[in-house]
Length: 216
Ligand SMILES: N[C@@H](CCC(=O)N[C@@H](CS)C(=O)NCC(=O)O)C(=O)O
Image (cartoon, rainbow, N blue to C red; front, side, top):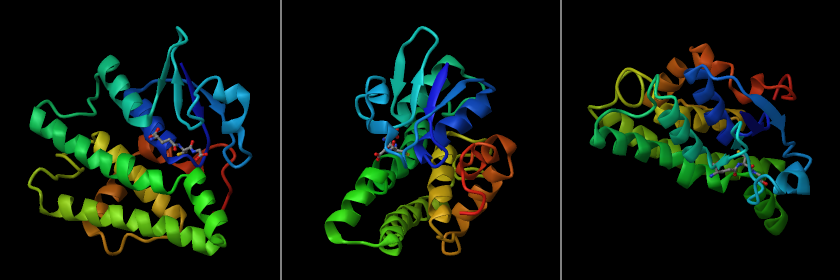
């Protein structure tokens, strides 16, 4: 299978972790978001939404949207599972995942932050402030849920990583790349540190990908 990827893409970070957890190999194909490659016909023909990640299976089928890709991988390669066995647990893990996938991350993607910067005249620090503001609001939501729920364990849901941890890791990685700190979010911080101590998460981190800056 092929994965259209770029070092800084947080949605692709989620997918890279899942592929690592499942022990799957893939061919990475770079889409340089900073150069605008996502808008070129070569990629638009693959994914008309012009966003990454895209997963292309060996039979040529396209799977897109990171959450759909994670669920596809989990159904086809069930071990280790990314979702709990019970319906209530699955609802909780999906809900935690959607805090970043549906609510926070869409506000900070390059197309949105560049539009806001151009329209309202933000400089680089203004753009970073916009990004941190929405990530921080998502972190408040994560901390509120994770710190009070009995289902929270070593990871977001119990003592094994689930889809929620992949999403939380992408959220925290984005926040810290934009110079945010997790000091106000101790439960999130504990879980994120646990995730990143695992090489399957750590090696998928944006700053460990080819093309990433040495110091960011
Ligand atoms: N909801 C989508 C978001 C995809 C997305 O916006 N990806 C970003 C990179 S993380 C992208 O390709 N952005 C291109 C742009 O904003 O122009 C998913 O989870 O896959």
